[in-house]
Length: 611
Image (cartoon, rainbow, N blue to C red; front, top):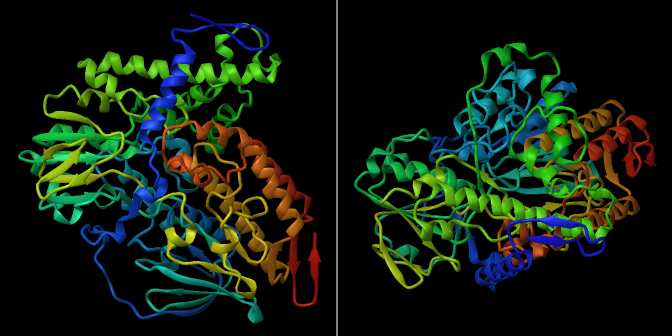
């Protein structure tokens, strides 16, 4: 049919009725909304019936440590590793990295479920490839290879000497008289550091839904981040041979479920896939790295590839698409330029918005066509079709997931309102009982809560100022790094800075900037750094303005972590400075090169300078 844009009347030819699609989106959203929003989930560690302990490293004992440091880095995932690497490159060696896991890697340490891979091309996702002399083995690396690269970074920059593994931070408090942070841990450590760089990450606390009867189940039950290979057999590469006489239910069809399902489908006697909301599943097209291409790489290749990738995602022109993946095709197509014959940027704003909505629906229409082409049973295919805006949830890419439903042993169970309950022998969905031997929760990680709830400690700044209370209505930073009232505290996670898809690139840029500022403080006898309140307020307001259209989009989405399970005020992207990442980091570099430290107050023993 032909749809005319509302102001200019420009015709757009599509194979669907946008009004009908819009109505279906609203209906599917309403069917899944829960009054509890984020309260429908609970932390894995809060459920005594499930094992939340570390399955990958044996516990060890050590004596408590009391130390004076220049820098304490909280978290040993890629954010902490990058902080350590950039501190080292800036000549700073007096730091500790505190990590709850038994090794570096963060989410890649914990998540070792079958099929785990990155969803951004390995050559841009894995950081510091040139610095460590490594080229990934395939376009999308498996989790084991990514974890090994985290270890490689740790060895290359001699970061293992700094690490306190299997250690949880319990308090972080500013000691005004000494211009120092005091960090305490569950091992009795007392670390006093001039700077604290927090790199705990947004997806650190596994969650499961609040389902009655969990304590009654007599079979095996675990979360994907604590996969039990003693029970399933096999490894992350598959061959789950101990499941061949087992009926298994997996709850959740986000990125994790989509990666794990093909392996469970191949080996389990019977598999029940419990789906609350279908996901967008595009093609993966993974392949080994071409040795000739790897040998041809010249110095600076990864930075050039980063820039090329970000250009396509953020609307900057490039003559060549080096990455040529679904992300670099998705974002340019969201404008809808390919659907009309006139420049989209010349249209009235109302038309540009309407065209973008139609383009979004067109992308989803193509996803539906892929499902129809790959899934043999029409009823199952219909259940697998997502009805929401294409970027309401992070898209997934997998070449085996849809085909798994063509097996007679695999059953898709639609559960728009979730699981009703768990019994001694199975689970109940929409009044029907399913007998199973094992239940696997692929239900992700806690989002939308305060950092105190996720990380297990608060940041207490000057005059007893609690960050939990101060940030109750949203983060308050300058450029996403510094916060007034919390001197020498630097946030390395997602916080009022630009971000689109590649989380490790963001972590690298934040760690690089933080390290050079810490180095400047050390070289110039600066005792404390924090933002001017006015500059901070201006940045907070600017961030909110950039988010208005994005939050309006998420408000119409089916519940998920992007929109706080329906409570948009607690959505994942609420504190993102929604501008081009290239423009953002160019701005940060210009700010640094200017040398005036605009918006910051730098204190030294005899001088206080506000810029």
